[in-house]
Image (cartoon, rainbow over the protein chains, first blue to last red):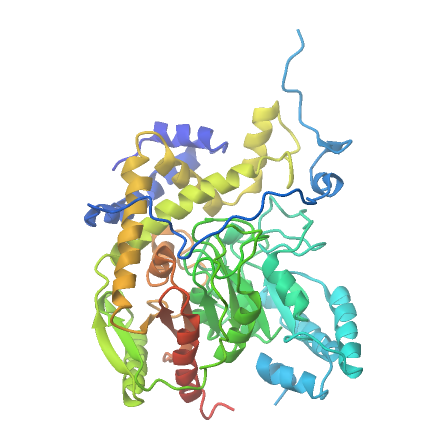
Length: 97
Length: 481
């Protein structure tokens, strides 16, 4: 499976990451090496595999859907880069006319 | 023998006999941490609160009041596990200013048992790495040879136990992050069955694979800690509703009649000759002591690493999407608009390996590739899991090397991601199958570097692993003390 530099750039955009031209090229070659390794999954016969089988190896049970105390808003926003009145502050997202 | 050289179980006996206090132990650990600062095992310490807690425990003990089963033991916790009021950085620049607003269930259980937390351990950023070189706070060094890596991603947790900065620690695993460093540093490290230990409060890397595991100097210590942290937690839907057995009950029972499976796939040509010979010795010892060695087949585990990199990266890309510079973490100083804020904060906040995994994850999840990679990998995962289940119909445990070589040099693989990923070739299949595995020391190579062997159990059969491991440990450490 080969990857193109345009795909790398598109992925970077989707991932909200910026790379220099140099970094993108390096990524491309590392990516190809990694994907060559990943090709090993195509050597296993997977016919008849039930994809719906749970990865959890025991029964799970649901807890009661009841009202309970959750974390305090003030404590949560304390970790935000910018907050005001218990809300996160973000840059202007809607332009005024 | 110095107090710091004792195992956690031995120190507990001394604490309970009032031969030593927890305050004394915390101070001893603090001194050792300062003396061995160059190992860079810890990101932060909390001696003041530790001493306060230790004082409370000491006074309870002095008055004859009931204390928890691990009361007074100083421990270190990996820095991707939340503890209220401590910095939880995940060794990332992105979270360098993040303060936990709650405590993870596994730590809460330890604190309830009387553990005294003295510090948070260095690690590979967001637990992505096999050498602990991907930390925003600098690499951790191997205490046995400082020119070598301690392994990763729980390099700090393991280094702190191996260098006797503490008596035990918690690490986390996604593909070998406890066992690989445990092997490189000559200590005992467990990857429990998926679902055995609650993940609530552990920063997610790949949620379907992540597990918290104890790092200790002895098998018994490890069993004691698992006994405390294991169990159903209503805050983690994936924690299993399976009774927690007494992990110490059979620990001295020996291995007579135990069936130990050996799969040729773990003894391929990738395996270093010296590691192989140590493993051969161990197998011969087990046989001589009443265990039966059984050949088993795990035909698809060669694909496990590939499955791992598809699934773990896919989940990582999704889990790390929450790091946006809005709700927590470091926001970039300069940006044009909100989209640019995301780009700049993420680009500046994440290290190279994390970016690589996010990119890979988004690639395998992107339209046109989802079926070929993600879905296919999920199917192969089931095949591998069933091969393990089948193998355990013929044996009680499986035995394999933990790593194909002993600890490598700092910088040796840092520019070659594929070579780095191959360090996990023997540990990853266990995470893919969801089964438990314990790495224990198995001698040293000619350079004096520890060799690790892993004992793998069927789902929720940690007690059997401890039994088999403890028997070998008794033989292996004979004459050391």
